[in-house]
Length: 415
Image 1 (cartoon, one colour):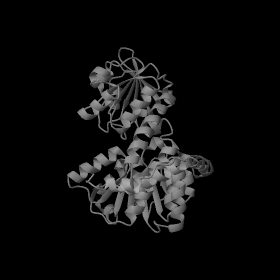
Image 2: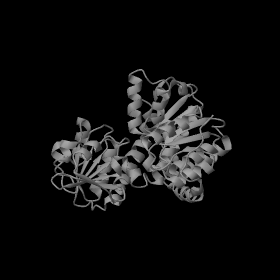
Image 3: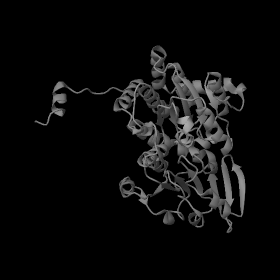
Image 4: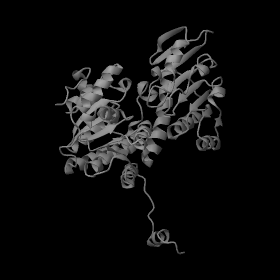
Protein backbone atom coordinates (compact mmCIF):
# COMPACT_ATOMS: atom_id res chain seq x y z
CA UNK A 1 0.00 0.00 0.00
CA UNK A 2 1.21 3.58 -0.70
CA UNK A 3 2.56 5.41 2.31
CA UNK A 4 0.48 8.18 3.90
CA UNK A 5 1.08 11.57 2.21
CA UNK A 6 3.24 14.09 4.06
CA UNK A 7 2.67 17.84 3.67
CA UNK A 8 3.34 20.70 6.09
CA UNK A 9 -0.23 21.98 6.45
CA UNK A 10 -3.27 20.71 4.51
CA UNK A 11 -5.12 23.91 5.45
CA UNK A 12 -2.96 25.85 2.98
CA UNK A 13 -4.76 24.24 0.02
CA UNK A 14 -6.90 27.25 -0.90
CA UNK A 15 -3.88 29.56 -1.01
CA UNK A 16 -2.03 27.03 -3.12
CA UNK A 17 -4.90 26.69 -5.58
CA UNK A 18 -4.94 30.46 -6.14
CA UNK A 19 -1.27 30.40 -7.03
CA UNK A 20 -1.70 27.45 -9.38
CA UNK A 21 -4.63 29.15 -11.10
CA UNK A 22 -2.55 32.29 -11.61
CA UNK A 23 0.36 30.33 -13.11
CA UNK A 24 -1.98 28.52 -15.49
CA UNK A 25 -2.92 31.84 -17.12
CA UNK A 26 0.51 31.66 -18.82
CA UNK A 27 0.27 27.97 -19.69
CA UNK A 28 -2.04 27.63 -22.72
CA UNK A 29 -0.33 24.59 -24.23
CA UNK A 30 -0.84 22.49 -21.13
CA UNK A 31 -4.45 23.70 -20.91
CA UNK A 32 -5.19 22.54 -24.46
CA UNK A 33 -3.48 19.24 -23.77
CA UNK A 34 -5.53 18.81 -20.59
CA UNK A 35 -8.76 19.29 -22.55
CA UNK A 36 -7.77 16.45 -24.87
CA UNK A 37 -6.64 14.25 -21.99
CA UNK A 38 -10.00 14.79 -20.27
CA UNK A 39 -11.83 13.57 -23.35
CA UNK A 40 -9.58 10.67 -24.31
CA UNK A 41 -8.28 9.50 -20.89
CA UNK A 42 -5.03 8.06 -22.32
CA UNK A 43 -3.60 7.43 -18.83
CA UNK A 44 -6.63 5.75 -17.29
CA UNK A 45 -5.50 3.54 -14.42
CA UNK A 46 -1.78 4.24 -14.93
CA UNK A 47 0.11 4.72 -11.65
CA UNK A 48 2.85 7.33 -11.87
CA UNK A 49 5.51 8.29 -9.33
CA UNK A 50 7.07 11.68 -9.95
CA UNK A 51 9.98 13.58 -8.46
CA UNK A 52 9.71 17.29 -9.23
CA UNK A 53 9.96 20.75 -7.75
CA UNK A 54 6.67 21.35 -5.97
CA UNK A 55 5.67 24.65 -7.56
CA UNK A 56 2.49 25.99 -9.19
CA UNK A 57 3.81 25.00 -12.61
CA UNK A 58 4.35 21.40 -11.50
CA UNK A 59 0.81 21.43 -10.13
CA UNK A 60 -0.42 22.35 -13.62
CA UNK A 61 1.33 19.26 -14.98
CA UNK A 62 -0.16 17.15 -12.19
CA UNK A 63 -3.65 18.40 -13.03
CA UNK A 64 -3.08 17.40 -16.66
CA UNK A 65 -1.95 13.89 -15.76
CA UNK A 66 -4.92 13.49 -13.43
CA UNK A 67 -7.25 14.66 -16.20
CA UNK A 68 -5.81 11.90 -18.36
CA UNK A 69 -6.83 9.32 -15.76
CA UNK A 70 -3.50 8.79 -14.00
CA UNK A 71 -2.97 7.97 -10.34
CA UNK A 72 -0.13 10.28 -9.28
CA UNK A 73 2.30 10.14 -6.35
CA UNK A 74 4.73 13.05 -6.00
CA UNK A 75 7.95 13.61 -4.05
CA UNK A 76 9.88 16.87 -4.03
CA UNK A 77 13.16 16.96 -5.91
CA UNK A 78 14.59 19.74 -3.72
CA UNK A 79 13.29 20.52 -0.22
CA UNK A 80 14.19 24.21 -0.53
CA UNK A 81 12.08 24.63 -3.66
CA UNK A 82 8.99 23.00 -2.14
CA UNK A 83 6.08 25.43 -1.74
CA UNK A 84 3.94 24.12 1.10
CA UNK A 85 0.71 25.73 -0.07
CA UNK A 86 1.07 24.12 -3.50
CA UNK A 87 1.76 20.74 -1.86
CA UNK A 88 -1.46 21.12 0.14
CA UNK A 89 -3.43 22.03 -3.00
CA UNK A 90 -2.13 18.96 -4.82
CA UNK A 91 -3.04 16.74 -1.89
CA UNK A 92 -6.57 18.15 -1.93
CA UNK A 93 -6.75 17.44 -5.67
CA UNK A 94 -6.01 13.77 -5.11
CA UNK A 95 -2.24 13.56 -5.57
CA UNK A 96 -0.26 11.47 -3.09
CA UNK A 97 2.17 14.23 -2.05
CA UNK A 98 5.34 13.70 -0.02
CA UNK A 99 6.92 17.15 0.20
CA UNK A 100 7.70 19.58 3.03
CA UNK A 101 9.75 22.73 2.62
CA UNK A 102 13.15 22.52 4.30
CA UNK A 103 12.98 18.82 5.22
CA UNK A 104 16.40 17.33 6.01
CA UNK A 105 18.23 14.82 3.80
CA UNK A 106 16.84 11.82 5.63
CA UNK A 107 13.32 13.15 5.26
CA UNK A 108 13.88 13.86 1.58
CA UNK A 109 15.10 10.30 1.00
CA UNK A 110 12.06 8.95 2.85
CA UNK A 111 9.76 11.02 0.63
CA UNK A 112 11.32 9.48 -2.49
CA UNK A 113 10.75 5.99 -1.12
CA UNK A 114 7.20 6.92 -0.13
CA UNK A 115 6.32 7.98 -3.70
CA UNK A 116 7.67 4.67 -4.98
CA UNK A 117 5.72 2.69 -2.37
CA UNK A 118 2.69 3.11 -4.66
CA UNK A 119 4.32 0.56 -7.01
CA UNK A 120 4.19 2.81 -10.09
CA UNK A 121 4.18 1.71 -13.70
CA UNK A 122 5.87 4.92 -14.88
CA UNK A 123 8.28 7.29 -13.14
CA UNK A 124 8.94 10.94 -13.94
CA UNK A 125 12.32 11.89 -12.57
CA UNK A 126 14.32 15.02 -11.79
CA UNK A 127 18.04 14.38 -11.39
CA UNK A 128 17.76 10.57 -11.53
CA UNK A 129 16.64 10.50 -7.88
CA UNK A 130 13.79 8.01 -8.29
CA UNK A 131 15.73 5.83 -10.71
CA UNK A 132 18.59 5.75 -8.22
CA UNK A 133 16.31 4.56 -5.42
CA UNK A 134 14.70 1.97 -7.71
CA UNK A 135 18.06 0.47 -8.62
CA UNK A 136 19.24 0.50 -5.00
CA UNK A 137 16.09 -1.40 -3.99
CA UNK A 138 15.49 -4.03 -6.70
CA UNK A 139 12.16 -5.04 -5.18
CA UNK A 140 10.76 -1.61 -6.02
CA UNK A 141 11.86 -1.88 -9.64
CA UNK A 142 9.48 -4.75 -10.36
CA UNK A 143 6.49 -3.53 -12.31
CA UNK A 144 8.04 -0.22 -13.41
CA UNK A 145 7.71 -0.14 -17.20
CA UNK A 146 9.50 3.09 -18.11
CA UNK A 147 10.44 6.58 -17.01
CA UNK A 148 11.19 10.11 -18.15
CA UNK A 149 14.02 12.40 -17.05
CA UNK A 150 13.76 16.18 -17.30
CA UNK A 151 17.19 17.45 -16.21
CA UNK A 152 20.63 17.60 -17.82
CA UNK A 153 22.24 16.11 -14.73
CA UNK A 154 19.76 13.25 -14.64
CA UNK A 155 20.23 12.36 -18.29
CA UNK A 156 24.00 12.40 -17.79
CA UNK A 157 23.70 9.94 -14.90
CA UNK A 158 21.32 7.73 -16.87
CA UNK A 159 23.68 7.55 -19.84
CA UNK A 160 26.49 6.56 -17.49
CA UNK A 161 24.29 3.86 -15.98
CA UNK A 162 23.42 2.59 -19.46
CA UNK A 163 27.09 2.57 -20.51
CA UNK A 164 27.92 0.51 -17.43
CA UNK A 165 25.09 -1.93 -18.15
CA UNK A 166 23.38 -0.92 -14.90
CA UNK A 167 20.19 0.70 -16.23
CA UNK A 168 17.38 -1.80 -16.01
CA UNK A 169 14.46 0.14 -17.42
CA UNK A 170 13.80 2.36 -20.44
CA UNK A 171 13.96 6.09 -19.73
CA UNK A 172 13.07 8.90 -22.13
CA UNK A 173 15.53 11.81 -22.15
CA UNK A 174 12.92 14.56 -21.94
CA UNK A 175 15.64 17.11 -21.18
CA UNK A 176 17.34 16.47 -24.51
CA UNK A 177 14.44 17.52 -26.71
CA UNK A 178 15.19 20.68 -28.74
CA UNK A 179 12.29 22.53 -27.12
CA UNK A 180 13.48 21.71 -23.61
CA UNK A 181 17.09 22.66 -24.33
CA UNK A 182 16.23 25.93 -26.01
CA UNK A 183 13.31 27.18 -23.96
CA UNK A 184 13.78 25.71 -20.48
CA UNK A 185 17.54 25.28 -20.20
CA UNK A 186 18.71 28.36 -22.09
CA UNK A 187 15.96 30.92 -21.66
CA UNK A 188 14.33 29.63 -18.48
CA UNK A 189 17.53 28.96 -16.53
CA UNK A 190 19.16 32.10 -17.90
CA UNK A 191 16.42 34.41 -16.68
CA UNK A 192 15.50 32.66 -13.44
CA UNK A 193 19.09 32.30 -12.24
CA UNK A 194 19.87 36.00 -12.61
CA UNK A 195 16.48 36.80 -11.07
CA UNK A 196 17.37 34.70 -8.02
CA UNK A 197 20.80 36.28 -7.58
CA UNK A 198 19.39 39.79 -7.83
CA UNK A 199 16.48 39.07 -5.49
CA UNK A 200 18.65 37.39 -2.90
CA UNK A 201 21.60 39.80 -2.87
CA UNK A 202 20.37 43.08 -4.34
CA UNK A 203 23.44 43.05 -6.60
CA UNK A 204 23.65 45.56 -9.45
CA UNK A 205 24.59 43.34 -12.37
CA UNK A 206 25.42 46.23 -14.71
CA UNK A 207 29.13 46.97 -14.55
CA UNK A 208 29.94 43.87 -12.50
CA UNK A 209 32.01 40.89 -13.56
CA UNK A 210 29.95 37.70 -13.69
CA UNK A 211 31.85 34.42 -13.91
CA UNK A 212 29.82 31.58 -15.42
CA UNK A 213 31.24 28.09 -15.03
CA UNK A 214 30.06 25.84 -17.84
CA UNK A 215 28.81 26.95 -21.25
CA UNK A 216 26.20 24.35 -22.05
CA UNK A 217 22.59 25.25 -22.72
CA UNK A 218 22.07 26.54 -19.18
CA UNK A 219 25.40 28.32 -18.83
CA UNK A 220 25.10 30.04 -22.19
CA UNK A 221 21.66 31.31 -21.20
CA UNK A 222 22.97 32.65 -17.90
CA UNK A 223 25.88 34.37 -19.65
CA UNK A 224 23.56 35.95 -22.23
CA UNK A 225 21.24 37.33 -19.56
CA UNK A 226 24.14 38.67 -17.50
CA UNK A 227 25.60 40.40 -20.54
CA UNK A 228 22.19 41.79 -21.42
CA UNK A 229 22.03 43.36 -17.96
CA UNK A 230 25.36 45.09 -18.55
CA UNK A 231 27.81 42.69 -16.94
CA UNK A 232 31.25 41.75 -18.16
CA UNK A 233 31.04 37.99 -18.52
CA UNK A 234 33.90 35.55 -17.97
CA UNK A 235 33.28 31.91 -18.88
CA UNK A 236 35.19 28.90 -17.59
CA UNK A 237 35.05 25.63 -19.51
CA UNK A 238 36.74 22.26 -19.94
CA UNK A 239 35.35 21.46 -23.41
CA UNK A 240 37.11 23.15 -26.36
CA UNK A 241 34.00 23.39 -28.54
CA UNK A 242 31.97 25.10 -25.86
CA UNK A 243 34.85 27.40 -24.96
CA UNK A 244 35.15 28.45 -28.59
CA UNK A 245 31.41 29.06 -28.73
CA UNK A 246 31.71 31.35 -25.70
CA UNK A 247 34.56 33.26 -27.35
CA UNK A 248 32.56 33.69 -30.56
CA UNK A 249 29.60 34.89 -28.50
CA UNK A 250 31.82 37.69 -27.20
CA UNK A 251 32.74 36.39 -23.76
CA UNK A 252 36.15 36.15 -22.16
CA UNK A 253 37.24 32.57 -21.42
CA UNK A 254 39.66 31.84 -18.58
CA UNK A 255 40.54 28.99 -16.23
CA UNK A 256 38.72 29.33 -12.91
CA UNK A 257 42.03 29.92 -11.10
CA UNK A 258 42.45 33.12 -13.14
CA UNK A 259 38.79 34.10 -13.06
CA UNK A 260 38.44 33.72 -9.28
CA UNK A 261 40.12 37.06 -8.36
CA UNK A 262 38.07 38.93 -10.99
CA UNK A 263 34.49 37.95 -10.32
CA UNK A 264 31.84 39.87 -8.42
CA UNK A 265 29.28 37.12 -9.02
CA UNK A 266 30.02 33.43 -9.64
CA UNK A 267 27.38 31.11 -11.11
CA UNK A 268 28.27 27.46 -11.56
CA UNK A 269 26.31 25.37 -14.06
CA UNK A 270 28.39 22.34 -15.02
CA UNK A 271 26.71 19.26 -13.56
CA UNK A 272 30.02 18.33 -11.92
CA UNK A 273 31.41 18.66 -8.41
CA UNK A 274 34.08 20.91 -6.86
CA UNK A 275 33.87 23.68 -9.45
CA UNK A 276 34.53 26.33 -6.79
CA UNK A 277 36.98 25.15 -4.14
CA UNK A 278 39.15 26.43 -1.31
CA UNK A 279 41.87 27.59 -3.72
CA UNK A 280 39.33 29.83 -5.44
CA UNK A 281 37.78 31.13 -2.22
CA UNK A 282 41.23 32.23 -1.04
CA UNK A 283 41.61 34.79 -3.84
CA UNK A 284 38.05 36.03 -4.33
CA UNK A 285 37.01 39.63 -3.74
CA UNK A 286 35.36 40.76 -0.56
CA UNK A 287 31.61 40.45 -1.10
CA UNK A 288 31.82 37.97 -3.97
CA UNK A 289 28.49 36.21 -4.55
CA UNK A 290 28.48 32.42 -5.03
CA UNK A 291 25.47 30.75 -6.64
CA UNK A 292 24.79 27.28 -8.02
CA UNK A 293 22.54 26.72 -11.03
CA UNK A 294 23.30 22.99 -11.23
CA UNK A 295 20.94 20.31 -9.99
CA UNK A 296 22.98 19.02 -7.05
CA UNK A 297 24.61 21.04 -4.27
CA UNK A 298 28.12 19.78 -5.02
CA UNK A 299 29.39 22.36 -7.50
CA UNK A 300 30.38 24.80 -4.75
CA UNK A 301 32.50 23.05 -2.11
CA UNK A 302 30.45 24.36 0.81
CA UNK A 303 32.27 22.16 3.31
CA UNK A 304 35.62 23.67 2.33
CA UNK A 305 34.11 27.14 2.42
CA UNK A 306 32.88 26.58 5.97
CA UNK A 307 36.12 24.97 7.11
CA UNK A 308 38.19 27.88 5.80
CA UNK A 309 35.99 30.54 7.38
CA UNK A 310 36.38 32.03 10.84
CA UNK A 311 32.63 32.61 11.18
CA UNK A 312 29.38 32.27 9.29
CA UNK A 313 26.68 34.92 9.54
CA UNK A 314 23.49 33.09 8.66
CA UNK A 315 20.76 34.90 6.78
CA UNK A 316 22.39 38.30 6.38
CA UNK A 317 19.57 38.50 3.84
CA UNK A 318 16.94 35.85 3.15
CA UNK A 319 18.71 32.96 1.39
CA UNK A 320 22.19 34.49 1.85
CA UNK A 321 24.92 33.37 4.29
CA UNK A 322 28.12 35.40 4.75
CA UNK A 323 31.33 33.39 5.27
CA UNK A 324 34.04 35.51 6.88
CA UNK A 325 37.57 34.63 5.80
CA UNK A 326 40.67 34.88 8.04
CA UNK A 327 41.69 38.15 6.33
CA UNK A 328 38.29 39.75 6.90
CA UNK A 329 36.80 39.17 3.44
CA UNK A 330 33.22 37.94 3.35
CA UNK A 331 31.96 35.58 0.67
CA UNK A 332 28.19 35.48 0.13
CA UNK A 333 26.73 32.03 -0.52
CA UNK A 334 23.21 32.03 -1.94
CA UNK A 335 20.67 29.31 -1.07
CA UNK A 336 23.24 27.17 0.78
CA UNK A 337 24.80 26.28 -2.57
CA UNK A 338 21.61 24.57 -3.74
CA UNK A 339 19.75 25.11 -7.00
CA UNK A 340 19.51 28.88 -6.80
CA UNK A 341 16.68 29.71 -9.16
CA UNK A 342 14.22 27.59 -7.19
CA UNK A 343 15.69 27.84 -3.71
CA UNK A 344 15.94 31.65 -3.74
CA UNK A 345 13.29 32.58 -6.33
CA UNK A 346 10.37 31.12 -8.27
CA UNK A 347 12.20 29.05 -10.85
CA UNK A 348 11.38 29.23 -14.53
CA UNK A 349 8.54 31.50 -15.63
CA UNK A 350 5.22 29.71 -16.09
CA UNK A 351 5.39 30.33 -19.85
CA UNK A 352 8.62 28.32 -19.98
CA UNK A 353 7.27 25.46 -17.90
CA UNK A 354 4.18 25.38 -20.11
CA UNK A 355 6.40 24.11 -22.91
CA UNK A 356 8.58 21.90 -20.73
CA UNK A 357 5.68 20.17 -19.02
CA UNK A 358 3.69 19.81 -22.24
CA UNK A 359 6.63 17.82 -23.61
CA UNK A 360 6.66 15.86 -20.36
CA UNK A 361 2.94 15.08 -20.48
CA UNK A 362 3.03 13.98 -24.11
CA UNK A 363 6.05 11.82 -23.34
CA UNK A 364 4.11 10.14 -20.53
CA UNK A 365 1.30 9.42 -22.96
CA UNK A 366 3.81 7.93 -25.42
CA UNK A 367 5.49 5.82 -22.73
CA UNK A 368 2.13 4.50 -21.52
CA UNK A 369 1.43 2.92 -24.92
CA UNK A 370 4.96 1.99 -26.03
CA UNK A 371 7.13 -0.99 -25.17
CA UNK A 372 10.82 -0.09 -25.02
CA UNK A 373 14.01 -1.94 -24.14
CA UNK A 374 16.06 -0.82 -21.12
CA UNK A 375 18.24 2.18 -21.93
CA UNK A 376 18.06 5.91 -22.61
CA UNK A 377 15.62 6.79 -25.41
CA UNK A 378 15.07 9.97 -27.38
CA UNK A 379 11.63 11.57 -27.27
CA UNK A 380 9.95 11.37 -30.70
CA UNK A 381 10.45 14.54 -32.73
CA UNK A 382 6.71 14.67 -33.40
CA UNK A 383 6.12 15.46 -29.72
CA UNK A 384 8.47 18.45 -29.85
CA UNK A 385 6.86 19.66 -33.07
CA UNK A 386 3.36 19.39 -31.64
CA UNK A 387 4.31 21.48 -28.60
CA UNK A 388 6.05 24.10 -30.72
CA UNK A 389 3.08 24.41 -33.11
CA UNK A 390 0.63 24.73 -30.23
CA UNK A 391 2.72 27.35 -28.46
CA UNK A 392 3.11 29.41 -31.62
CA UNK A 393 -0.63 29.26 -32.22
CA UNK A 394 -1.26 30.46 -28.66
CA UNK A 395 1.12 33.36 -29.30
CA UNK A 396 -0.63 34.24 -32.53
CA UNK A 397 2.44 33.45 -34.64
CA UNK A 398 1.83 32.17 -38.17
CA UNK A 399 4.24 30.22 -40.37
CA UNK A 400 4.89 29.87 -44.06
CA UNK A 401 4.05 26.55 -45.71
CA UNK A 402 6.14 24.73 -48.28
CA UNK A 403 4.76 24.60 -51.79
CA UNK A 404 4.48 21.20 -53.48
CA UNK A 405 7.48 22.14 -55.65
CA UNK A 406 9.52 22.96 -52.55
CA UNK A 407 8.57 19.65 -50.94
CA UNK A 408 9.63 17.76 -54.04
CA UNK A 409 12.92 19.71 -54.21
CA UNK A 410 13.80 18.94 -50.60
CA UNK A 411 12.97 15.25 -51.00
CA UNK A 412 15.08 14.69 -54.09
CA UNK A 413 18.79 14.72 -54.79
CA UNK A 414 18.21 15.64 -58.39
CA UNK A 415 18.09 19.35 -59.25
